[in-house]
Image (cartoon, rainbow, N blue to C red; front, side, top):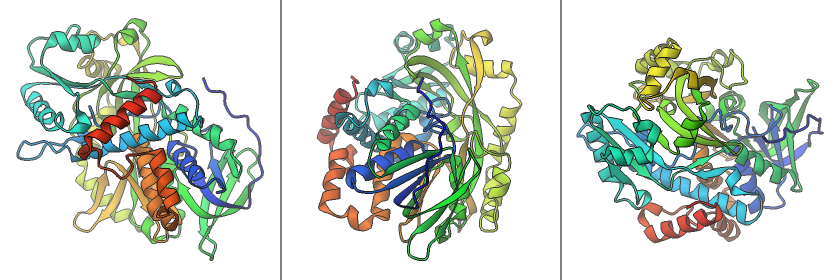
Length: 503
């Protein structure tokens, strides 16, 4: 286990170039990138908890790790004509390679230590049953395996082969239903909590960087000079303070929406959020944990949000191999696991009330799904688990709370309001405020998202040869469509696999 940060009270700097709200993987990534691009930049980080990466980035709270679109079926929707659209999967896979390159840079430059502390090779599988689903997966495979991003994807309807890939998934399974699976050997599991903490440990040693734990960001107001006055509260002594900055990044997970609403920028209007919680079934049978080494994803239930796509999942958390199934959806009005029950009611404002109403009316299947999930008994959850692990016994599993996710609701001219399943960056017109909303694929694409955000928030510096050269050093494929450059993709994967101790 990581040693927790000692509770202490540090003086707030009255002025800094950058303020990062929240100490999760997004803020960590942005902070390191900015410090590498400009070693003289001054940064302050405000985190309401007493340690970095313990809310949405934490391994137990994160609904999916190592998203590379290899196995997540919700990234490849089926069209009305029966074809499968893989455009989103290609984009996510390309973004994930940017992350791998950035993490390799961190390791090579010794900014973080042993890569095995946060990344492990774990094959990614998709598993379906029933004629309709098998045909869907077959169509998906045909569309994907010829694309360079998914080279090496294996298809199988052979039960013996699938039993070698995932023994506990096949043991005791009926022979009646048609069954099919795809597999990507180069899949990974990533502990984003450990990774975030590693990056913040590095940042804490850099000149001009101050990280404040147990300090909550409350508000931000324009200072009349193109910058922002950030108001904060020390939760150890209830003392309020403020700091002036040129740029604010709001990467506070579920709390981002509240802080964005307090920023006096036009771009905040119309945004709302709908919280969805999660529950895991955590295995404590050592034999089952040892026998399984894969992330096996299936198809989501009708109305289920993307984060609730069922999977039987090998994780490596704090050096220990774990086995999880889920997540099961749960409902709470909290926007954070450590949040308030008033988060949802307080988020409803005049500018987003109509979009939230329309989005709610158009997503009744989601409401029905959540109600059904809330009614599940332990025996009901066991039935769901046995679809993936037929021999599962209730006594081998325990229920564990996962994290909260806030799905983005935004206004729409045609539909009034829509529920967005993804990650969205909101940037003010002058680039001095940026906020990250949404969930999946989130953490896995952090490097690409943060690097892309720089072009809007640091427009002048972004165009300079110095910044462009450094960005290419941190991620050679940034800005390149790897799906159309197989040689660069191959070089990138070989290099990152070597540095990150992967196959």
